[in-house]
Length: 370
Ligand SMILES: Nc1nc2c(ncn2[C@@H]2O[C@H](COP(=O)(O)OP(=O)(O)OP(=O)(O)O)[C@@H](O)[C@H]2O)c(=O)[nH]1
Ligand SMILES: [Mg+2]
Ligand SMILES: [Zn+2]
Image (cartoon, rainbow, N blue to C red):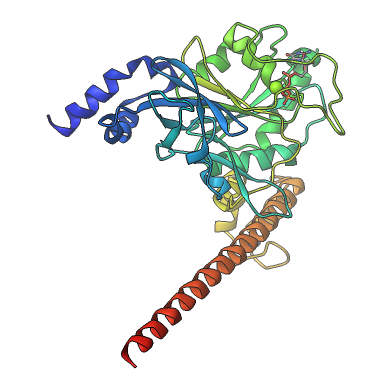
């Protein structure tokens, strides 16, 4: 059997997983495991050493001990394609297939560690409530991580019913658009059903992850798209401050009109994580202007021939954008520098260990020959 027909048969054997994103490339990647009788499945949820995986035979619960390494970036995550044992108690996830994309943030500013929020995502949907004051800086931060993940970002202004004036809603969209070049900005009301068809069409292919603050209406939106109350929603809540989070695990759902949706618990803040490219994409117009500056390393402060300052003065570039760009760049450089320092430290430890091992080997040799 040729390689392609082997992978084709792997694809068809598990074609029941197609609504969850199973395709011939995943089948190719999985093919080496079929001889062992292992099963492919998409991770729906991970919690406390266990996970739910949807397989061609239905959803199974499996142990994640083999896929929970020390490195948080390599921990099994919602959206991963798992390699699951066909049975046993406990039944184990043996491995997962190499990720195509991953949405990563840093866990906190103190510990420079990355955390995977969702794997194998095609659309990163940033949900923002139209009912509260816009925080463009936060949207830019989400978008930087979204671009960096390799997914296409989309901003969705939720709860449009809370903005009775269409003109006001239009202005909100325009404001978001200035902070999101190259990113579609949609408005929806899960309450009234407005805009759901357009959103469903955008999410109709590939896998999408819903991101945003607690209370932004992510789960309500997921339920509206599913046409069923699958995710819990809380009516009375403390949105700011200590904010109770209604959704506590990331959950993967197949949408009736096609596409796969991952609902996530609200994030109060998202720290950048090695997102230099993403930051550049969020501020694409500034990076384009900077190409026109006379000096290659222009700091856009008081240098002559600065195209960025010229755009500011002409009112073509909002001051806020430039400030936000600088802030996120600084933050990212800080994180990158910290990470490198940590990596360097780890490497040093490794060298020391090897050095010690080398010494021991030398001594053993000497002992033998002397
Ligand atoms: N008026 C109005 N309220 C909405 C709409 N969508 C959601 N809400 C309300 O907003 C609140 C928060 O909704 P959730 O869907 O739980 O928000 P979430 O983003 O999933 O929150 P976490 O799970 O904590 O991250 C609930 O009280 C919803 O009823 C909408 O379209 N219009
Ligand atoms: Mg929720
Ligand atoms: Zn300049």
